[in-house]
Amino acid sequence: MQKDEGSNVLLKKVQLCLPSFHAYGHKPQCQIIFSPLRCDGLGLSDGEVMERLWSFLRRFSRMTKEMRPAHRTDVLCHALIYYGYKTKRKLGRTIT
Image (cartoon, rainbow, N blue to C red; front, side, top):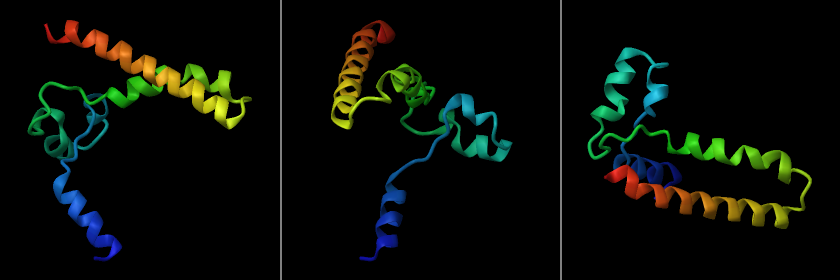
């Protein structure tokens, strides 16, 4: 199997979708095909999970830029663990 063949196999298994708030910046035809409301199995998710994560992590850029790589990795790992905990804790309120 060549390198490109592996990519094609993966693309056949993945459904592409635009985040809700970014969809309006695309052409109407693109919105129709890739809107989260039209993607099977996505439910009513807005697709902005990564945007929220980047927003949370932004505060650590200035704090960690002078750190050694190992220390920076530790701080960011702890921040991500906390973010996951916080997100999981809010999940119960979101579902009900």
